[in-house]
Image (cartoon, rainbow, N blue to C red; front, side, top):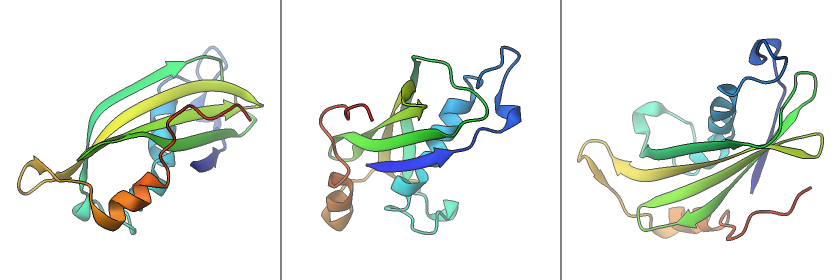
Length: 136
């Protein structure tokens, strides 16, 4: 599992005084950088071998400005050429949001999915957790 701390900025808030719901997908993407480095260590977009097939975010509590948010990232499924990334946003010991994204290992030139094999598959498997992690 990867963890990353995000310090909310004032502009992340909305008129209701909490973190705007549009920020969570962006924070989740930022936290996926650790996972993306398994594919492209320097994060060079010209070498990008992934496409997104599905994204969902479920909100369970408000998140606020002034306190860091911990983003937890792991794999919940590892298929032949695709995998599901599960993520949670925690603040002050409380779960604020949970997200899932399906990513496909993809050859942009050929326009087709590519099998996840060898060292890459082994590296991904190290972050595979079948069940949701226990609360911190």
